[in-house]
Length: 139
Image 1: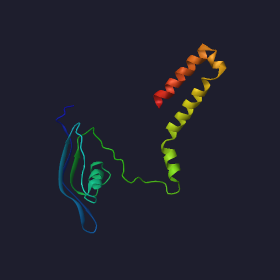
Image 2: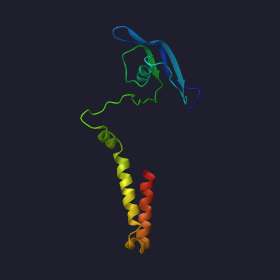
Image 3: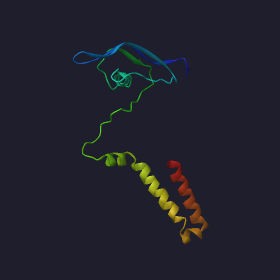
């Protein structure tokens, strides 16, 4: 793909929050393939609203937003929706479960390196080293 290809454009976009709070007014943007962008502005100036429109999360706006076929956008919300019945620790634990399990497996493997049965058996030692490498790669 050429670096000169426009993959996203926005023309005449307006965003109004009822009753009359206009946060985006007549916005025109285009992004080239591979572009790095930053969105700067004061609090309440519409940065998050703009990003939600670009990501396709917010469809309640006036104007035109166009993506080239084959391209998509993701959005990491500034204020994620969390389960109110869980503690912060529980929410974080869920998010890192895979890594926590891998770390636990890695620790268990390392403890086995002190096992005389493994130390005295080259085949078992090689298998353990392989397993350690696999877990380490996943980490």
